[in-house]
Amino acid sequence: MPLVSGAEVVLAAAKSGRGVGAFNVIQLEHATALIAGAEQVGAPVILQISENAVKYHGALKPIGVATLAAAAASTVPVVVHLDHAMDRDLVTEAVALGFTSVMYDASKLEYADNVAATIEVTQYCHDHGVFVEAEIGEVGGKDGVHAPGARTRPDEAQAFAEATGVDALAVAVGSSHAMTERTATLDFTLISQLRDHVSVPLVLHGSSGVADADLTRAVAAGMTKVNIATHLNNVFTGVVRDVLADNPKLVDTRKYLGPARDAVAAEVARLLGVLNAV
Image (tube, rainbow, N blue to C red; front, side, top):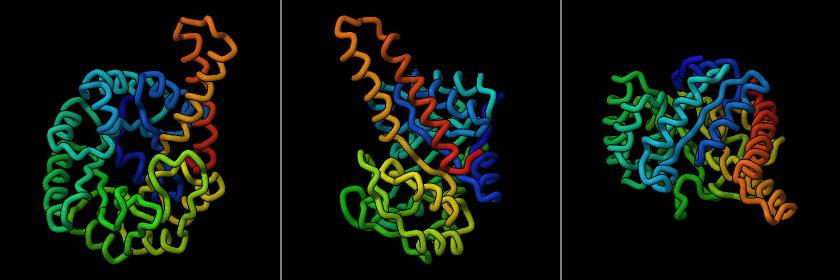
């Protein structure tokens, strides 16, 4: 199945009240695991490559081209998404490579500058048929809009979405990046208020810290795209640790990366059910 646009997957899910799983790719094993999990349940999936992952690899093209190739061979709809890109040139490169969705993150700028920069990127991406996600930012804490105490005001979210013309909006409702325990407390009333005010799909970042039942409830309240990374890294790394502990002389990387990949695929399939993505 060919790659699909973010609009095709995210907008369709928003209209039907379903969630969409958006999972991060660091190595190729992640990409193939995420696709395998989605194929197990017949659900679309978003493969995300963050600016931090690009820095890890030293360039976007190697991991980007590999992920695009894996996505193109999938039997389910796959979106390849550039996540949290603050580098404008990186957005241009992703679009040129064939990414079908980007998140441009200008949230560290002052509001007016964020709006101006996001408008420019959105117009460029739309000219190339690419879906755009953004965020308002600025509510406190070094994690900005995704700090645990941060909250997005519905009126501000509406104004930002309308001013920039973005296709999806990341909002702050109680989750936070890089949580290793699933103890985040979401504000479901706020999610519903945001859904009523904002005409584009809402995005939940930092979802690794959210329990299953609350993820399901968040989708029911109005959240569409749900980003999960750290939780799946925990699954992957846990299996690697277990295999190496049981086989201390093991040196063939396939013997421990393979089981880790399979475990992530199984967890992705389960999470897509939790998100009502099927």
